[in-house]
Length: 142
Image (tube, rainbow, N blue to C red; front, side, top):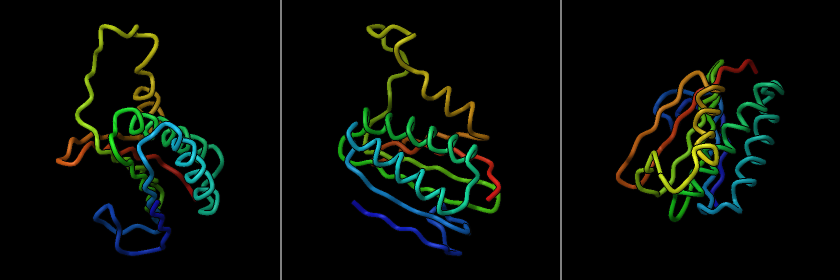
């Protein structure tokens, strides 16, 4: 596991950020709660207000859950606070996700992405050579 928490003008997002933290975990369902607790504790330390912190933790939970389900080796959580925006980036080592599976009832799966899109001001999904990267941005006022 790799963890950093820094106040830095050089960001892992490629632009300046006030605060940022990175945690890498095995892409397994058992580690989703560790990602969620890491985010909750860190955002409290960064003085992110409770309602925004709760939304961010729910986003982390959904994205880490997807990374654990579809990733193969590891998942990485990046949190970056940039003035009034919290950037949440989850990467995994999985392949592209099939959008519709006829063997699964539509009411059983697929709500996580909708929850993230509802809570976040913006979301992006990128397939990379090494896996998938999902970005969500959430307004906050620390």
